[in-house]
Image (tube, rainbow, N blue to C red; front, side):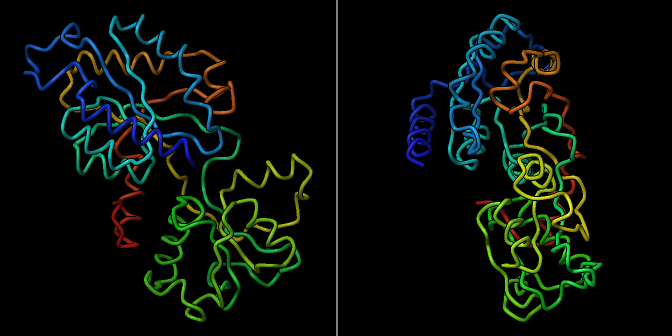
Length: 304
C-alpha cells in the first residue's frame, strides 16, 4: 500500500533525525518518572483498519495527561526497523506481532508490556477444516494426499503456526512440506482466510488451515452455514500482538506506563482500533510467547 511506504519513510526520517525518545540510559537506582519527559510509540498500520492511526488522538492526549509527559506516536511499516531503533534507544514502545516479539526480545532486549483480550468469543487459534461431506478425514494424518490451502507464507495463523503443528505432529520435513506429493497432493496459498474457507466449501481445496475466528464471522454474515465445514484439528492459542517497552527505561516509569494501559477504558478507542468496544489491554508475559520460539525453531526461520 502506498500509505505503508510513506509511513516507513516517516519512521526512518524521524529516527534518523533523533526526534524520538527523551530518555537515554540511566542508573536504575537514581531513576525517577520525572526523568522521562517524552516517549515515542510506534505501531504498524492495521490492514483491516488502515485509518486506525488517525484515531489515536484521544489515547495520546489521555496518556500525556496521566503521565505528565509528551507522547509521540508514529506509524511504521517494517518491524525490523522499529526493533533496531529500540535497540539503539531511539524509541520506547513498539507494537509487535507474535513473531516480532521473539525478535524484539532477542535483538533489542525488549520487555513485554501489554497485549489485548480476544476480539471475539473464539480464541485466536488455527483450525484445520475439511468439507462437511468428507466424513473420512478425522485426523491431521488423514490429510495426506489431499489438496491443501494455506493463507499466505507471511500469515501467523494461516501458515506459520499450522505448518509448525503439522511438522511436529507428523514428523514432516519443513523444507519439503509444500512440495507436490510429499505429504499433500498440492499446496495452494489462497491469500485470505475467508478465501480458504470458501475454497473448501466449494471443493476447490480438500482441506485448509484458517484462523478459527473467521468461521463464525462468515456464518453470522450469512455467507456459509454453520455445518458447511468440519474441524479436524486445531493449534494451541496463538498470542495476540503486544506492545513491548525499552528495558532501560526507569522501572517506576514502566510500572506507571503499564498501569495506564491496563486501566484504559475508552470504548470509542477500542472500537476504532480493534473493532470491539469490549477489547481491553491486559498484561503481556514472556511465557505467553514461548510457543513462538518453538515455532521458529521448528520451521528453522528467523524474521529479517
